Image (cartoon, rainbow, N blue to C red):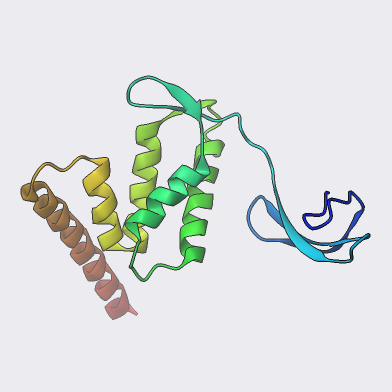
Length: 164
């Protein structure tokens, strides 16, 4: 590993910690200048390709997924840890399909699934762009569906509590 301060190639690992499903954090020290720095290692899984709506294909980019979720969650009470966990889970789900290619619509649907769990406003924001809402009626329809599902889930929770 090359030192970012003096460019020496002689560095030592001081500490290693697993930070995510496939990420390793390493604290390093340069043997020459003695300064410390952190590196992150991630397994290169660049074999997953995305089939876009127009038929073009490109490599899966988890950072694009992360940016989309970040944009939807802007100024919402969703932590970076929750966002990173959602991105990790989405990528894991896609890679576990064992298919070399995946349609972009599958990725969008997964993002919506996770956003629905994280924050309803972020979900509506993402859905409005992803589904290309054309008017307020489409917003209202989606909000009604979301409210209905929320009421059904709350009713089921209430019933479960009363049975105990």
